[in-house]
Length: 300
Image (tube, rainbow, N blue to C red; front, side, top):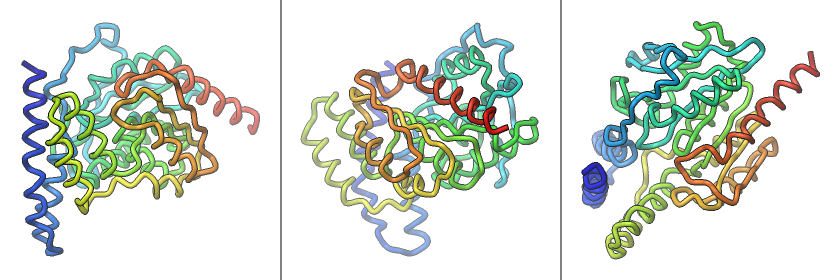
């Protein structure tokens, strides 16, 4: 039943695509309508994919509720770091929630890292409606909240997954954080939309609809760009980019192209690993973070 509902939503979104071009004018009203259509197409708060809380995490994190700079109520999980360890600001991808990333919380606990798993506006237990500007504001406000919890900005690592990698880059380009980790990143929203369209409609075995939607998406002039290619150029802190060759949602060539735009980027391409799983990259994340800590110790 859940699978049926998920694909029903995908088809419903596909039917909405042609209406986007009815509002191609540059008037404020047309731009606002296009943004609303984009938000519906891009964001799918994870209600169909909700999973129960792992008993091993009970009592291991502190539920946090805070107000963003634009007055939206946001929910997050906070795990306090061990002495001398950084804190990971985790930014999940599209159609997900922090419940889908309990393995990240467990990973941080096991290694002594702090963690702040952010639930974007409009997602799990957070109010408001998601948008590009909105999720950037959520992440920036999360940094302020971490400061209130005693975590300095310089000790924060922004870890983004999929669509969340754009928010991680935006956060890193505007703040003096410790580092940024990009797991299965996208380049910008148009190519990401085409990739997602191709993946889901291949699975539905309706290639004509897939090709029709592909042409529509290629011709869309998105108001919200989610442009990682330009953002990564402005990042001054260390960058770790992780991707798998078997990722069927976001091609690993995304990471290769992104790495070319910043000489600080460390690129690691893996032979196997899915888009939604993270087990394949956790050892590299651990090695990267411990390496950063060792450099800091050598400098002090």
